[in-house]
Length: 223
Image (tube, rainbow, N blue to C red; front, top):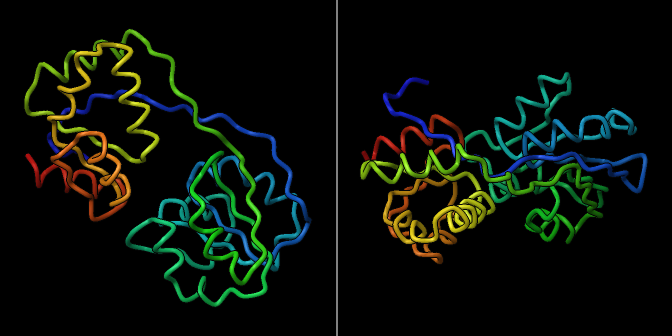
């Protein structure tokens, strides 16, 4: 999508596969909480007796990834990708006395399990983990270039993404930590906004759609 903006890439997290094995061979439902969970969890799903189990995705991008691998998604929130949106769906609310396997990254949120676990048996399988990228010369260059322009906008897709970015900036240039908080910040959820406010950001825009289009629209509303 060509929006006329100049993107500056500042990688913060890298994804690494985890070897995990579920406790059972059969589940009534499977939930994927991200596209990464699909990429790293499909091998596990294929090894299970999954043919009669329902498959749910946390959002449209995750559902598309599952479809691309040849699996049918039974339901996903089309507008806003989040655990809360998924839990609000009729298909999820109707799950009762089911055994559910949730594919996620290491240390993910507990929202789905806490809600679904009231009426179901819920198990996590952690198929990947996010680790901080090594700081490279390009990080120094991008940070300096960004701070030289007072028209910049920061885009963030997760709380961990933001916290890691701030830790890396502090390692690169401690004086830049306060400066970066004066820039507008575009995020994908109210949860990220609340965290951003807690660490000192005050100009925060929440994208209406949790995808690239939503991020660009939010950036355009600021600039």
